Length: 216
Length: 249
Image 1: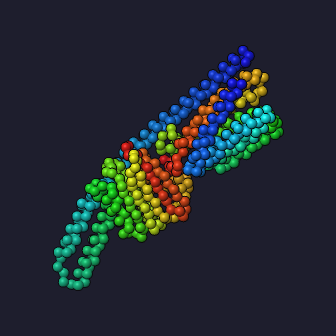
Image 2: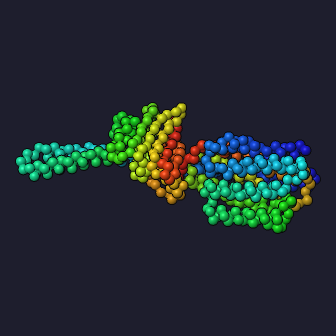
Image 3: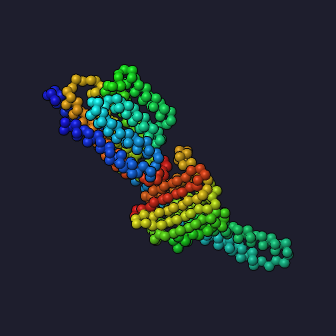
C-alpha cells in the first residue's frame, strides 16, 4: 500500500508544471500551447485514473485513450516547432492512429493493458526529440541550458526511453508477481517524476515574448 | 517478490541506470559542444566585425580627409577664376553646385561608414544626427528618446550599427510614416526599442527562406553583445524590435 501511495505522489507531480502553466498561459508564446495542453491532459488523466481505480478498480480504458491523445498532441507540438515537415507529421499521425487501432481494437481489447502502441509512440517521440535537439545545436545562438525546447526534448528522451524499455516487459506478458510488476513500473514513475520537474523548469524558462533567432 | 524476480528486478534496474547514464552523457556532451561551437563562432564574428569596422574607419577617414579636401580645393580654384563671359560663369556656377552635391554625398557616405560624431560626442549625438539625416531625406517622422549612461566603445559601435541597420530596413522596405527609437537603461540591462507603423513582414518565412542580410547583421552584432532580440511583426502590422543587452559583457 505504501508503494501505491508513492506511485500516486510521483504521478501527480505533474501538478507543479500544470500550476505554472495556468499562471503563464496568457503570456507565453503560442508555439508552446500544445505542450501546456499536454501537461493539463496528463494531470486530468492521472486524477481520472485515481478516481476510476477507486470506483471501478481499473484505469486501463482511459489510459489507452490517453496515450493516443498524448501522442497526437506531442506530434502537433513538434510540428508547431517546425521540428518535422508537414508530410512527415501527417505520416506519423496516420501511423500512430493506425497502430493504436490495431493494438487496441483489432489485435487486443481496449480494456487490456496494451503495450505495443506505447512502445511505438515512445520511439516516435524519441525520434522527434533527437531531430529537435540536433536542430537546436546547429541553430541556437545562446546556451541550451535554459532553452525550454531543449529541456522539454531532454525530458521526453528520458521519460519515453524509460517507458519503451519498461513497456517491453508488459508486452511479453511475463508471469511476474504483482509486487514485481509494481516495482518495475515504479522505475517508470520515477522517470515520470523527474520529467515532470524538468517540464516545470522548462515552463519557467519560456520567455514572455518569442525570442528572435536565425540559423547561421 | 520471488528470489528469481528479485534478480530480474536488479537486472532491469541496472539496465535502466545504464540507459540513464547514456542519456545524461548525451545531454552533457550536447551542451558542452554547443557551448564550444558558440564560443568559436563568437570569436570569428568578433574578428570579422572588428576588421570590418577598422576598414570602414580607414575608408571614411580617407574619403573625408583626402577626397573631401580635394573637392574643396577644386571649388576654391573655381571661385578664383575671373570670367567675364556670362555663359561660362553659368557653367562655373553649375560646376560649383555639382561639387557641393558631391561633397554632401561624400559626407553622407563617410557618415554612414564611420560617423566621427560617434567617437567625439558619443552614441546619443550620433543617433540624433543619423535620424535627422533620415528625416531630411525621406518623409518619415522618427521620435527619439535616449536615457543611457556612457557605454564602452565596443558596445557603442555595435548598438549604433544595429539601430542603423534597423532604420535602413525601415527606409528601404517598411513604407512607414512614423517610427520610434528608444534607448534606456534599467537595473542591469540596456533596452533598445525600435518600432514602425509600416507594412511589416512574415517573420517565419523570412527566417525559413534565410533572406535578409540586414537581419543577419543585426543578429551577429547582438551575439557579440550577448543580447536577446524580441521581434514582433506581421504583414500590415508594422515591425517592433525589442533588444535586451546585458550591461556587463
